[in-house]
Image (cartoon, rainbow, N blue to C red; front, side, top):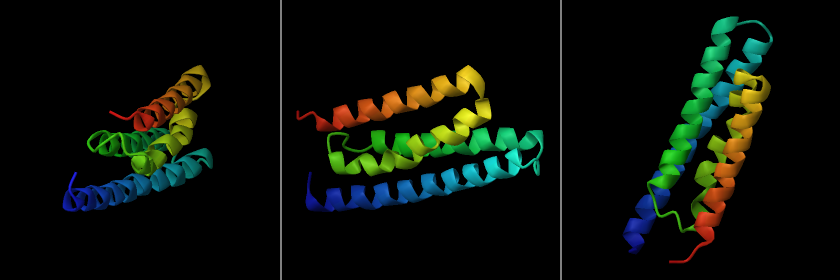
Length: 117
């Protein structure tokens, strides 16, 4: 990978992280408003939607670059953190399974990034 291509990937990763982080913060704020009963039942849908968006943006951003570079794992941080609003939004055993699945996904990403090939 050339220096220019690497610099482009880093800039794209930082933008991806920022967008996913905005979705995560919005999901957390919506979750708080929902749990305080300010938003009602629509707060649950918004919390789930924003949490899923944070996860998708960060995971797709990470997967679209060179996954063997460990330094790129920061892109996944908002997606993994989105496990909280997603799990609380779904609730019960389903929410617990989703949190566990996201933790397994993060572990897989770490293992993938450690491989040399």
